Amino acid sequence: MSNQTSDLRVEYERYLQVPHQYQEAPSKFYTGKVREAATLKLLARFHITSPTVISWYFDISRNLALIHLSVLVKKGLLVKVPTLRSPDGRVYILSYSGAQQAEHLTQLPVYYRSAPQPQKLINLNAVTHDLICSVVCLMGTREARTDAKWDGLIAEREVNRLFKGTGLRVVDALVQEEDKQIAAIEMEHSFKSKQVRQGILVKYLAALEQGAYDKVFLVSQSKGILDDARRLNDQLIAEMLARPANARHGVSITEEQAQLLQKALVYRSAFCEEIESLFYR
Image (cartoon, rainbow, N blue to C red; front, side):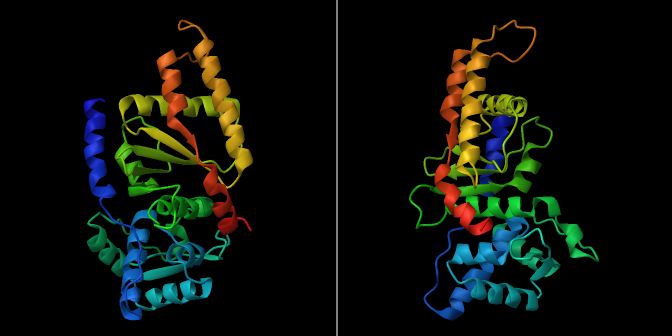
């Protein structure tokens, strides 16, 4: 592990220490307070949320999720942003007051910007992607799940800041498993060409060798996309391994590097059905 990556791991800690486990309080009053704090922390990390995400996160009806979010808007903590890019026709972001409270709750910097049109404060092309990423990251914090357990997360916007200037590929998120291993989360929304996959594999290998993370979780709404990713990745690793080290064209890797990639790539097909049911039905 290089000194630069060792410093990165130290930087991870303040993000990984923010708890996101949600548990209802003994009374309705305190449950409301807990949900308010949890929503503000969620938005501090992922920038946007929606009734679908809140309904899933708190295990409540969509109607109750809408009421909860509307209350926070009336309190001046959130701003509603209408957009057809969201399955709910809307998303919510932090207001200035909400950002201040979220910063206090997370002890992390929350960068607030204002604009006459709130739609300009979000990346409309990535709305569904960002909502799905928030759900996937929070899956490991839910006690009801037994196939995904982690005790800390770093959202994509935070990864972007941490990896800036390092040459590392900016992954969709990082999570820390119970054994303290760091896993990168990569969303696979569509089929990719062989050439694109090879470029991504080379980036993964560089990050794994430098110790930026220990494994890569590939996640999708489609088992077909994950199966295709596995097929191409296996094929490319075999081809790069067979290619001579001094080959004039193409990338070559050693046996050790091939094993590192094969061991690190994890295809989380168990998430497909839940993602599809939340966002594509």
